[in-house]
Length: 425
Picture 1 (cartoon, rainbow, N blue to C red):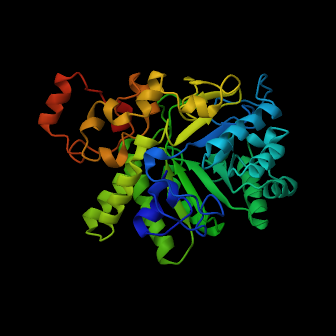
Picture 2 (picture 1 turned 45 degrees about the vertical axis):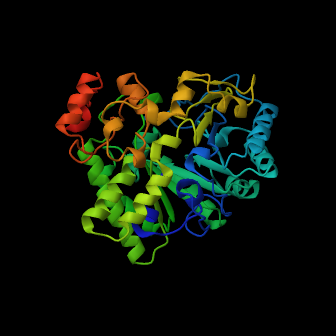
Picture 3 (picture 1 turned 135 degrees about the horizontal axis):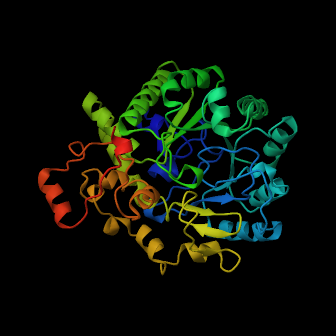
């Protein structure tokens, strides 16, 4: 997760501790009301743990990473098994538990589980499509103790409804959002960038301002579930740069006008480097401070398999929520904490020692210590190699310092990974 507002403008939020090793404040769209403990280094972070509490969902999103449908799935963790998982996560001292799905609000014991998590000292957050949040459910969310609620949209009006597979989904999601705001619940917007909405980013930012949304996360597409294929929905590298330019410009505009809006991007650590390069090109005095923040975080180096983990509805433990086809073990047989610290699995061992494993242009990139090779699952999907380059990197060979001599080295070592044509148009 790249805090655009933090990097560009120096504003503090409660996520600073985990992302940048700094004590942040709780007043700027953060994920909770309490300031988190500052880890000594990014490598020592416990994982923010995504728990997909159910696979069932009332919508049918075209890019759903869990390929969920509105039907009952048998064999999901029981209430007792869920509480045992939460016991272990609390003892393991994970910084947050993200209750996700499917649509987590369709699970009947969701509020019992969240209250239990709070009693154990955990910080629960909620990822929801928002369509089920009437005033009664909003009150239950607030009372249960969620520190933050992320409501997912994929555009304004019909664009969102088309992606969500349900007419009226946008209006229902906004009803839910407003119901939460009315109760003082911390809530933000989550939006996945696609070719169907990136051209309307100006309108989306106008919408953010109009609705007084104080936190917005823009996600890059990750190839998983129904979004596994590199389809016509994914942005090209040129389009991604266009989107980032708008996101940065509008974040600055909000700041200059005194609007308290925290803007973040998710699932592409290259964004941090792009912000740094922009500041350097502008001759900004913030550039050096941003470089130090990125050096502490190290991007993807300590994300998947280290600072981010996933437990699915059956109790299977995955590298992250987009890697459902690879399992390290099941919490019904072993505790999550034991599975997560066991490096006998070759992928887990590799993810925890990523700098030694990365290949291709990422390995020789001059920004590797800032980006860490970004998302490993995208490399797995495209190249069938979890340690190849991330094909969603939109920086050119020249920008990352990949000289002809370095290209020759990659060729000699068999580390040439052709960039998908679809992304470079």
